[in-house]
Image (cartoon, rainbow, N blue to C red; front, side, top):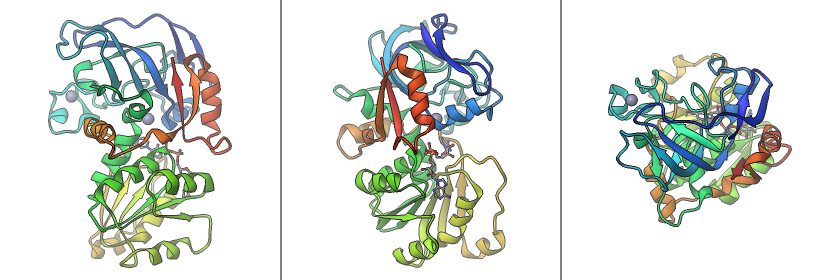
Length: 349
Ligand SMILES: NC(=O)c1ccc[n+]([C@@H]2O[C@H](COP(=O)([O-])OP(=O)(O)OC[C@H]3O[C@@H](n4cnc5c(N)ncnc54)[C@H](O)[C@@H]3O)[C@@H](O)[C@H]2O)c1
Ligand SMILES: [Zn+2]
Ligand SMILES: [Zn+2]
């Protein structure tokens, strides 16, 4: 089969590799029909994730059809359409049992293994370890583009943003970063009927998308002087009830410390590469709660149902489409997302 193989920092190729085979009774092999590229794949290519060995097939998002199941798999049959979670989960270890498969012990203590520690989904076929618990069936009639973003970014925005933030009706919500993850947080925050969803970014295209298609009620460009005060003036109590950070740099998390109102919550979704100074001397007396973490993906079945019944729409994240064997072109566009007005690129077999 053909797959996108990592060959060390800055090096990758769409090339011939052996087809995956069943290695464990819990494995499921799927024929990939739709996949996408994540910002994390770009981090791997920059050499930021040294655990990824040369020769690994990248990718942790996929919709496909089951072509083979291990002898231990009872729930799924050949021919079923499924969406893979970016988090592989055994379903039985202590972390899986408390609802945090992001720390699944059976797959090495970190649930994200696809396209990281084992071959991933940017390929014609992929082996899914613990397939019964790591794949979700797709309701009849749903298109690939309606479910592909359930592998990773929509659960990320919902779990690490909206659920951790405990967004409640009537609250003011600020989302800093209107990339695919921030936009997913906005789309799912709407489910909680907040008073406002204020999108913050530097990119006018993304701010426009936030308002047009992802439920933002206001947009604020953080390149403008006075933007913090502009946001405060939009909120009911001079600060937000929930501030979500979906960028991953010190400046935006530091802004969250200023934007949150007493008793509010800050949810850090972004992946940071450097330490951030926390003004705990100011925050303690304001009863601020801060959360952070890796996506678990456990919300995917609920989110799929919400799309199926028309309460949530995320397919508008797909801005560019390619054939699977146009992987290199797709990477080119996604690596220059701002210049190409791209949110997510979708690759279809
Ligand atoms: N916690 C998790 O499990 C998890 C999972 C997936 C992604 N992530 C992280 O979430 C973050 C967002 O992911 P994404 O795919 O949307 O990334 P992205 O790079 O597409 O989006 C980031 C957005 O932030 C904006 N931005 C940059 N600097 C800014 C500033 N100073 N003020 C306001 N906006 C600014 C950019 O214009 C961009 O639109 C990343 O850090 C990613 O690594 C976390
Ligand atoms: Zn990802
Ligand atoms: Zn587990």
